[in-house]
Amino acid sequence: MQLNGDRLDISDTFPVCADELVQAGWSKCWSKRENRPYWFNRFTNQSLWEMPVLGQHDVISDPLGLNAAPAEGTGDAGVGNGQRKRRLSEEAAQGGPNSFKRSKLYRSCGRIYWDLDVQTNAVIRERPPANHLPPHPEMELQRAQLTTKLRQHYHELCYQREGIEPPRESFNRWLLERKVLDKGPDPLLPSECDPIISPSMFREVMNDIPIRLSRIKYKEEARKLLFKYAEAAKKMIDSRNATPDSRKVVKWNAEDTMNWLRRDHSASKEDYMDRLDHLRKQCGPHVAAVAKDSVEGICTKIYHISAEYVRRIHQAHQALLKDCNVSDPEAADVQDRLVYCYPIRLALPSPAQPRVELHFENDIACLRYKGEMVKVNRSYFTKLELLYRYSSIDDPRFEKFLSRVWCLIKRYLVMFGAGVNEGTGLQGALPVPVFEALNKQFGVTFECFASPLNSYFKQFCSAFPDTDGFFGSRGPFLNFSPASGSFEANPPFSEELMDAMVTHFEKLLEKSSEPLSFIIFVPEWRDPLTPALHRMETSAFLRHQMSVPAFEHEYRSGSQHICKKEEMYYKAVHGTVIIFLQNAAGFAKWEPTPERIQELLAAYQVSRRQNVSLPLEHYPTSFKIRKSTK
Image 1: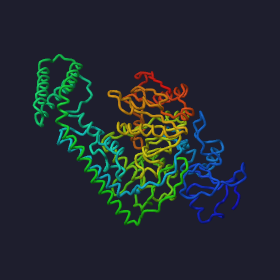
Image 2: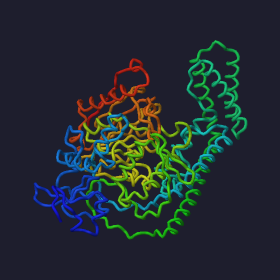
Image 3: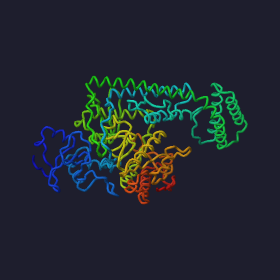
Image 4: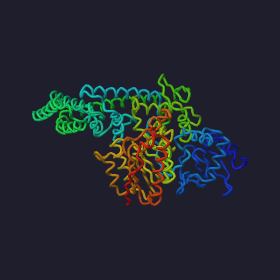
């Protein structure tokens, strides 16, 4: 072992495992302060006195304090001067993909929407590897084909039984809502849910019966919509098994409306909309009663088809693993100790991966498997490479990297559909200035709802532990139980998922005495008021809340990994409520003081100035703030 500056050559001392440790980012260094050697990981910034074990988690053993939580009022979480100097010198010498200069170059050009240098302050109890089947392009291709077929079944059932197109995004929200309850083996499709009938799908289909009500701008549009509703309600009540009283009420109101339309040609748009509202109140309950059984049949049919598809996929996946001689490993030895949160690991080893082709078309990375191509912007491809280097422990030579990227992108494409702009709203993210303010002012280092494609930090929870864990995901948030830390939560806008999220927040806050803070961003839906928003506004852990009005703020597009730069942000068409839920220790450490709140609001203003599509005078400048401190 030879002394080489501050770093020691480990090959002489540990010739067998030296290559593996170096590939995993470990090096042996000399501490001048302590006058003894220590181990440092350049990917995770972890430091250990003892020689690390490959695959070891981020145990809270940090002799040099490199993984410390951010100090009050500092934005570079856990980065001390000594650590920054070491990182700069090592990365500049290596010139690797995580080079500091390269990262800053991208950021200065306005093309970077993440900061992977922020270290986590989220602490969890060590947990065993997950029992999900490892991803494989062949299985992902089969899952994609069957999910597309399931969407087609849903479209046909809505049209054949109710004469309507499926409500926009309703299938996507069905997937989100079902996975809150599902105990089945598939990461995407539901198969073991109770109840079988989805409240989300049932509610959305019923809202479009007898016709879909669109937004109205002009008087003639309102007149046509009123006539179509009256006609559709009368036709439905005549063709279904309705009671005599229901038939009489609907037919009388529909005919009365049509007669009024024939007589009165001087009505205004408001007159037509008032008449439509009256007609819906009179006919709606009777129309819903005759459609109820049919819509429940649609929900039940889609669920049972999904369960059958899950059975097929699972059998095929098991057969593939058996052919590749992948067997169940021995149970992992898990100690009851607190550790910094680490990416979710799979218990089963990954089988050999097939060849995935990669080529670049200008700034687009194209990955192809069996003729199926997925695309991602070059900068996001680099981001995935960095996340993989930080998080994957079983593929130091990147031999499985391309196939895992293909599976990851394909999964999200399939989940949110192939329609124009479909699913982008369900994956929307906060603007970069807002994330920077959250980190600097409130110590936020973790996203509760993100993906490897849209995350800002390198530590986050996401929907799919099997594909996303290799890129830093800690697994689904509802299965993630931190003991301390500061978190941002911007959930997909599914009512059932948001309600389950609030339940999980309150359980965690009640259980932990360590500093724990959640800053939640949800739509301001008050007509009617959603259960999740009502529960948070009346929670014992509510420390502060404020509202940012519609059209005064943006979200980053859910398709940011492939969209054009000018399409990166879109205006929020509804208000957003920002809620701080904190336990006593979290409130003491990250209190939402007026000064910090103003910095957060200023970040929204910065984002708006940088990304508006209309002149600023088109938008109001006031922010409506409601404060409640307990």
